[in-house]
Length: 517
Image 1 (tube, rainbow, N blue to C red):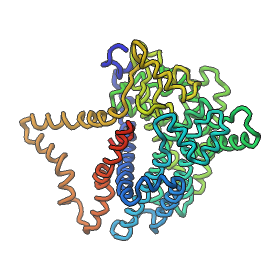
Image 2 (tube, rainbow, N blue to C red; image 1 turned 90 degrees about the horizontal axis):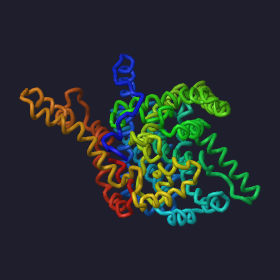
Image 3 (cartoon, one colour; image 1 turned 180 degrees about the vertical axis):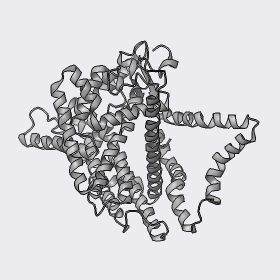
């Protein structure tokens, strides 16, 4: 690749001039994305903190002895805890309801911890095979699948079912939906998105539930049932209408290879700009709920079969929304809003995989995609994105061999290859520094006392001072126990108790320790 400084710059199609409409779109999209990430960050730290506390009582080794049983019990416990308050919102002047919310978050933390342990997979191919052999259901499915190693995805769809199904039922039922249900549902929905994306991506390219040659009629019927369940039930539970992802990904994304006509293209955006990310996410969100850009592309290319599939999937999605809205409009609105805000997750994936584009080789997979070196199998093939774009129909288990040959070749790998174990922390430090360092330098280097006053206000008065001497309200002491446990205490607890797990994962060269960063 040529000049690394240019890799994040827009290549073409970007209108540098300002306009009232563009400014309005930027403002609206930035508001949506910012609040989305604030909400996600809050849910993350609440869950991570609670999970860290629970890990002291329930160690990983205990969960690993009976992971599926722990998953089922923790899911049931989390669902039960959502029904412990009499009204929609808890009463924060009542110590009992404050305690119930704390217990709710502990149950959510327990479930999230169990889910991550249950769906975890080893870093090597040999480890994957041994892990499959250790679980009866996966071992059975591996004997009838066309690609036996795809049985590793069983833990994903089983885990996602137990995560989202009970809470979806509670969300849909008017007598049971409340603030606790929304909190638990939000955590579960975020928790399953990327694992579901992983199996869905494999499924649209190489069909995870495809039977092996010579499989018995009974085995074929079982896999056909699992395929139907995944396409029409679990995907809807994960807020992914049938056909939409396959049509957009196979017939647009891979046809255009991140080019300007790709509805997910990052090429025309400044990939180092948060505002451009927000605009990209806003556009993805509109597409997720309408399919407009996808439909327009397919119509221009004359792909009538794909148009029918797209409309079929969106028809199923909106039929579900209408049915739910008839008896629970709040739940229907939450489903729609969650689907729309999912554009941010779509953009995270797009910028992760296509955030660096070589202007001289933007038409080549190694010029518009990024590889990530980590586990041997590349997170079940997801990290070898250059190899995937070269031959999308190739099974994910073949990517590692191709990637290794490229790395060991005389010229090295032609694409940008990032080391996952160092990328996360560095990105975190860089992101914080972009705001903190210029702000501190400007404030301390200016003669106007108002600048220093602003620095003190933003770093101290609005944080520690606000808790020690509140100027807005006076509440009994137990009110602030809830504030500490649900707003800023989880950060401290999660960081402290996560250190042993981070050390173990560093030894295994596992990059997930960087997720909190």
